[in-house]
Length: 122
Image (cartoon, rainbow, N blue to C red; front, side, top):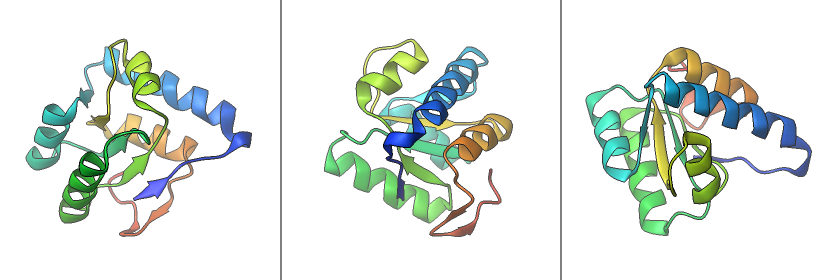
């Protein structure tokens, strides 16, 4: 799992949040722990994002699931920020279920290579 941090990446952060909002409006985001886990297991998830301030148990659960199903996984922002991007309350995890949106987010987060090798899913 890759952590995405950096002070010089504010523009990319805004692009990611904007893309998440568009994906939510298009119905291509599964948010919340239960729906994210379901999207991973059903094979619909193309990219999983976890809030940096999520509990250690949540991070470990999604890291293990993403590793098993070979889905790119990234730590991004906090629960409040992710929730606001989706027009909801706090969200500790979400799964992007569209390859186009996942590719756009991955490009802005510079996710070209993960610990699983090249990202075929994005």
